[in-house]
Length: 590
Image 1 (cartoon, helix red, strand yellow):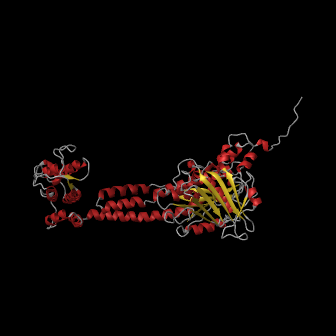
Image 2 (cartoon, one colour; image 1 turned 30 degrees about the horizontal axis):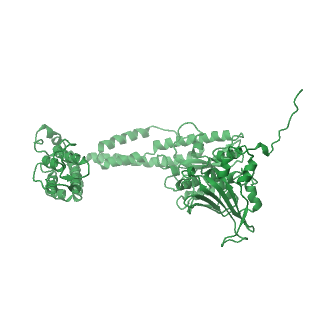
Image 3 (cartoon, rainbow, N blue to C red; image 1 turned 90 degrees about the vertical axis):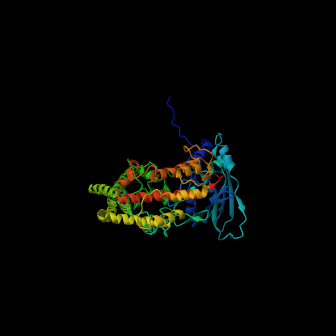
């Protein structure tokens, strides 16, 4: 005998308390996404301002808006799960958002006031709800048990029944495991990225033009002021300085129907933008869907984030999923749309490679520094490599939306080529200079150094360079010897003996009788003493540096220009040594 078809009818007995866990903790995972849900509800209530702030030593997180508020019946409906009577124009639509704070706190308190209606309060016991997750109770029984009665509250001193309207959501006694998530800095950054905050057009002036273009494409701007801890929230970018002024516009079509409109700005430097000013984000009704990775992962291969931008969803068929981290794959629009996005991102990377190849301001600046430092050979080598690179060609992507950027990049590249010609002339001019001119320049630099050197070295050098000539001689470290004698009370003229006794070095890590001077409370004093003697031994030890001897030949074989450069560096080192000796404390008598 064949079974008779049976119609399955669901009643409230089919829904247990575990469903509530899936709809709260499962969707929102106790993270900052609940703030997005509450902001959406506030915007849908036509609020002009939202304030988010902590109270009671960061124990309670408060979301307060100036929206239309709720009467008693509307408050009851707002607590329904998965059921919403909001119109299609609303931002929130799943009827779950008011419960989204459950995983973050011990209780949710809602206080609301509608014009010409009383002020109401209701409390949801989040602790009790979590206790019921593992039990086989009916969802309706649990909801009834954890939700308190609607109380009518007295109006405050500045409130009136006729005019006052608002809603306050209080996430009270934030759970300890959530406080590491709900950090002030992270909350601010999250709000800046996700909610429909305006641009700070006082700093990001391009934002005014972007707003005009969004409106022209039918995208409604949300006019609301959102504050966190009394600080107004703005969405990125935060400054014009990092970008070219070109606004890249891209319209996405599926079956000849517009599904999305995107705008982007591109970095004016050949490098990835800082985190706060980079990334391309999907937006719907000005709320962010997913993160920058949701856009970039639509194409295979690398993408260097030299752009910031937004892709605004226009087509109603592209619906975001419950966690708002992606779009639902329930239509024939999403796949071709994502494919277009992937192609576009690939073209952005090709544009970045083109820019990197032809815009060469950074290597130009490096070559300039080498020329200024008289490192002519290095400058010439780097310039030759740069010129060879520019001789190679690289193609620009065919994407129509990016052709305006090609003109901008080529214009900057032409400026670079003019600078390269100037570098060629500068290198030739440096090469033609007479050695005497180079020596004169270095002596002028050395004169500036003498003016700012230690007093004892300044006196010594002022005497030995009176005739404008700098030489290496056995008295070159006389200032060090004199200062050590003053600090230690020793009379030895031999710098080797002076440094050994002053800083008690024998084989650097061991000593004889303990130091006389102390630079720091560690054996590094001995290293310092050995360093002084090392400099002396390398340059001016009279027993080793007799004229014509092989050990001194390296200096005698130098050009006059090289000798002066070496001596300048030597006296810079001596100046450092003198400063450290001055800082040394005398800790015992000889």
